[in-house]
Image (cartoon, rainbow, N blue to C red; front, side):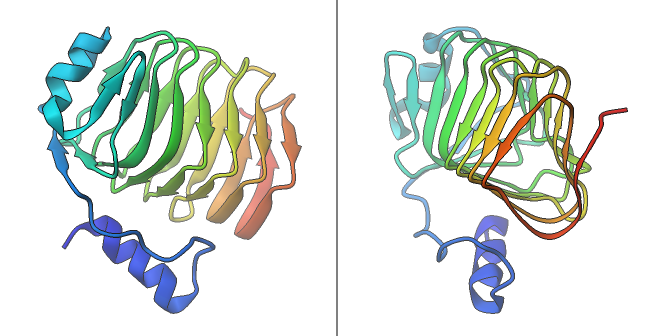
Length: 203
């Protein structure tokens, strides 16, 4: 059985997480090969085929699961948006500016899931169910936002941010050693459940 649905089902049955009821099974599964680099939308179309919708700079998974083999997918498309689905076993290296993830469930990896090297990355209405040491590592905090999202990482660190200017609002952090590492951040209306330390400076 898919790990995502085991995790979500346990959360629903045991009341251990602050997430809604588990979603329906995916309508499609998109299996990506290793070592992919998305430099333009033609790369995206070639990777997902007819199993998702590509319009302009947006990839709409339409409820599909996009699965990898444990090796990073590099996204280097300015203004790219990925929305409405789930991503498993596929760490992401984001090198394009102003990349957005919206309404996406991230699950399975035991390493950093999103590594952001470019400014302006946004994570909105997403859920992270991970076992990683650091779930989201942002190397350029300028313009980064984490809004109305949920993150648990099995007593690891939720978000690690280098540089100021990031905004984290209306989000829930659960079962973490440290929710947020960084300085000069805007934190507003966040919820911390089973978190040892809400915020610490990045060493």
